[in-house]
Figure 1 (cartoon, rainbow, N blue to C red):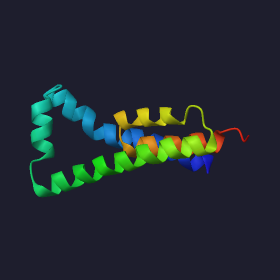
Figure 2: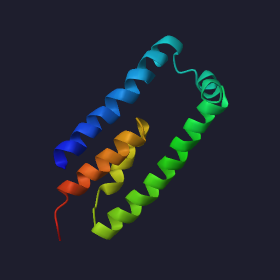
Figure 3: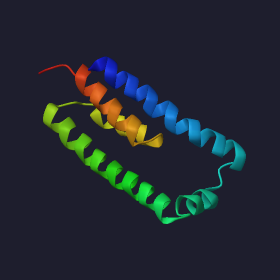
Figure 4: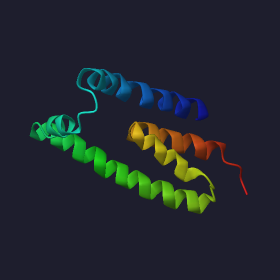
Length: 102
């Protein structure tokens, strides 16, 4: 499972950034344009709202599961949300595989 989670971490980093970095290169850090394009139509809004709810669910899962398993630094996987839910979840699952049993 460790290899699978590591592969998913790599994909969860490369795939989202392969779309965001060119957009950022073209538009710069234009937050109003970013928000406008996120809400451009119902399908875009649907996808982003799904991602936001998923990020909230992931944050709750990571906090609770880290406490349950006594993972001291489990919360650090949430830094992956700076890239996306796909990285943060894969990273937490990888960290959970490497945790030392009590």
